Amino acid sequence: MPQYTPPVRDTRFILDHVVQLDKHANLPGFANATPDVVNAVLEEGGKFVAEVLFPVNLSGDQQGCTRHADGSVTTPDGFKEAYKQFVESGWATLAAPEEFGGQAMPHVVSTAFEEYMISANMAFAMYPGLTHGAIAALLAKGSQAQKELYVPKMVSGEWGGTMNLTEPQCGTDLGLIKTKAEPQADGSYSITGTKIFISSGEHDLTSNIIHLVLAKTPGAPDSSKGISLFVVPKVLVKEDGSLGARNAVTCGSIEHKMGIHANSTCVMNYDGATGWLVGDEMKGLAAMFIMMNAARLGVGLQGLGVAETAYQNAVAYAGDRRQGRALTGAAEPAEKADTLFVHPDVRRMLMEAKALTEGLRALCLWGALQVDLAHKAATEEERETADDLIGLLTPVIKGYGTDKGYDIATTAQQVYGGHGYIAEWGMEQYVRDARIAMIYEGTNGVQAMDLVGRKLAQKGGRAVQAFFKLVAGEIADAKAQDEATAQFAGRLEKALGDLQASTMWFMANGMQNPNHVGAGAHSYMHIMGIVATGLMWLRMVRAANALLAVGEGDAKFLGAKLVTARFYAERIMPDTGALRRKIEGGSDSIMALDPEMFLAA
Image 1 (cartoon, one colour):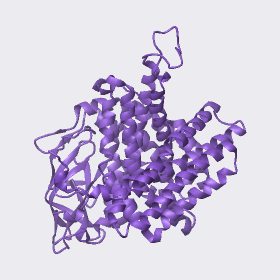
Image 2 (cartoon, helix red, strand yellow; image 1 turned 90 degrees about the vertical axis):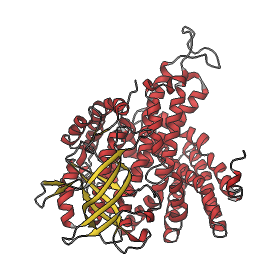
Image 3 (cartoon, helix red, strand yellow; image 1 turned 30 degrees about the horizontal axis):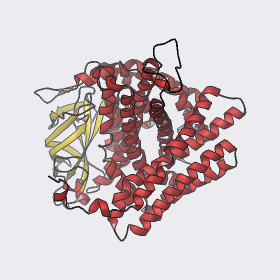
């Protein structure tokens, strides 16, 4: 059976030394995040997910959700009770505004808790996760009346929320949506259409579900410019906030999926359902992007969360399983065989997982800090820089983070050998669950194209230049620190050079042939992911060395950080050179074959 222990010590190290939470105590909301409060969130949050959510993860996957003849859906055994405890313990309210019943903690602190939730039970975590995204969209674009009517009960967890974009004929190309919104005399709209792949679309955890739905009004352009956003509650809400009649929206079926079985991914049918416009007509895509960007960062966190649990179990298995002898001679002669830890290739897999999970944790939490700073930093310049950086890195955190999260899950499964392929050990669930993160909220190919096709050139390249300046500045500072730190900084400098050279190659060749950019987009996203994660490791190296120099902290923990950083520098950062050469290979060989020649039969 699998196991999971929230990595509280590592999170605390990152919050203290990479995010440097204490430096932002003067900002709104950060005053609440005192060391004692943050420790309580991490310790108690970790205890909650380990004791309440993790025990129903495997059984929830095996049982799945059930749709009934009336279109209602029940979640697996134990989920409703777990959700009740989640709400009663106040975890739903962690980062929400106090105005609507939230605790107003910084987003970076709630992100740490969300990682633990995902690691313990990814399918469960999706229910409140979608709600938080819907809250963000309503707070940004909803009317005051809509905020007051819906948001408080969504914040408390009494009501859930969803986002409804995809339809059978369209996914990424939302301009093709067919869902219609007909205006009514009372100011509402009649919503008719079918949406697919709707996570948490129908369930029994909450008394109401507030759907945010993309649709087109009469006469709207037949493109993405004609899309509007509507709030469509499962149960109509009276002016006093009490529940009224059931709305004309139902779950037509539950998708039969590879993983995340315990989350109800629904086909949703809107049959003249009553909805209300959110924001301006034909400005719905911009409103929904608020939710989508939050979701993309959340999906990047899913890559990390599942990888962490898979990695922990692989480490435990490697320590217990005895197979063969060390290449240098028996490590434990009294035993019939040594543990898997003596084998360099097993070590390779575990070190890759350790280096990437710890690096990605730092990147996800630092990214969450940028979300906070984009809204709360003291100066306009600081807010602008933070917004630029998180805008640039959102597709990287989602795309690179989930590519690597899936790699780690499959690598952890590999450590188990044949047992990893057997369901009772739990590893195959992590592989199945991790796979969806590379697909939804925009496939990773879409993320790569968003990065190179939109984010690099945005605002005259201001964001990518800010990123280059940030990394180069920290490399220069680190080189003057000590020899060990300078060595890591030098390797990161080389990786940054590959990223900058690739950027220049796109600039020189992309205009004459846009396919060159498309062909290199995925490799570019990975180079930026390696460099961004390398920056996090540079900060951890500097912090570990500084603490060791004054005799503070756990020397064994800090020493492990330095060894892992060295592995990252020697075994992962060199990949930027190969990725750069792939980019510079252009698109000719990729685009040369006629479609009929892909099958040689």
